[in-house]
Image (tube, rainbow, N blue to C red; front, side, top):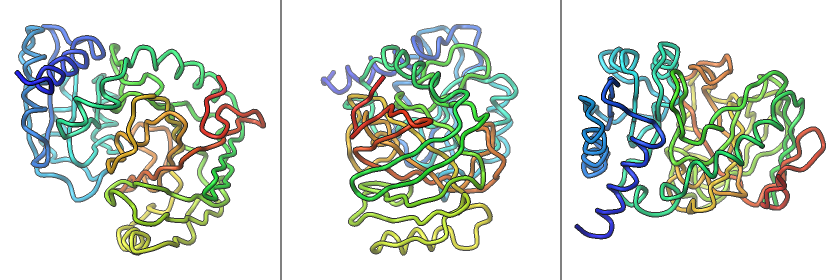
Length: 324
């Protein structure tokens, strides 16, 4: 075996056996799409076989956009499983199918990297248990808080209300009880701001969901919880085209705070948004078990670098450095 083969097997084993706690009694469903590297799925299935469970592998056609619903037969299988592990090129995390599976008691990951490199280098090789301890402290600061203010050197300056919203993702990939869900790599705390309360300017840098690496920053002008203008280069044009006519697509859906010290700032938002010292914000869907009320077929994350984040006036991140 090559070093990458060995690392892939080790990380898959940690995910399946340590983080998800799969046992022989679990009904385990592994999901890929036609963009997923077969070696990733093979490693996950091998790790599942070691537990004695009779895992099922499902491969679907890649969705058109992250947040698009999966086929009905797969949605039913997700709701019937006790453990779901999705490694797809288009995320199923912000879907009604994920919400129904979670409500039915399924635990697991509904958005994991689809390429071998992302499993053998960077964020996936970090110790999610260590990150979880930090994430729990951050989640504790967000619970019961009222207002968050995010700024960045690139020009982000945005405020939002979060009253009553429960932090998500703070499990950082460790999902061992029914209904616990996360996204991989582990390493963020996020929540949906209260609809209609976010205002200011958001400058997206480096990478965005379904756009990939950005040649130029994309600037969102946000008023009363929705994006009212999108400015920038050709990627801004593409983003406007992607959301045109899509109900709910301009909703400010998420604020996420990255906590993974090994996450790389590459062309894949799934990993980049977990980098310690960054934030990400999303437009579109915030329902499907995430905690908001806006249903939309899109959920598009964008990266913000070197952030300062104040919760009720106290910095928890300052110039990209965690203050917890």
